[in-house]
Image (cartoon, rainbow, N blue to C red; front, side, top):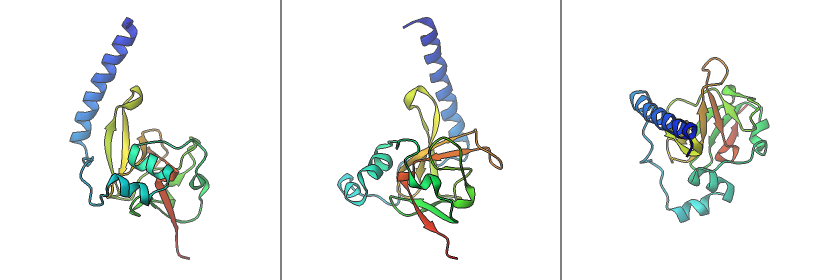
Length: 163
């Protein structure tokens, strides 16, 4: 390993440790025991193969493939695993990333944890009720929160508002 890679790895591990402490001191909720639980076989029966891959295996859909990316009606985006309301259409925006993006979740709808995969520190978003992987949160979003909840469309359903 060359010196630059070694120093980068050390800085990444240090950052991950500091981020983990910050997360525990913040308002994050621990990810682990969820009110809605099914066996792996039951999840496979309940979900499409794409939903299972994302929600239960922390996968990611290809960018620009979700029909929900272009969803502009008023309504609520729900968890595809347990139907918990997660995001309001009023908080959705076009981030240009290829995934549905939101400035914030509905209060008490999601849980977060530190994700150290892919050699970086990210905030992973889960459904608070079933623990399904939804996507990640980044701090490069627009006002009013400055946050970008970058969410897999296959992890969501949509319920239009009643007019």
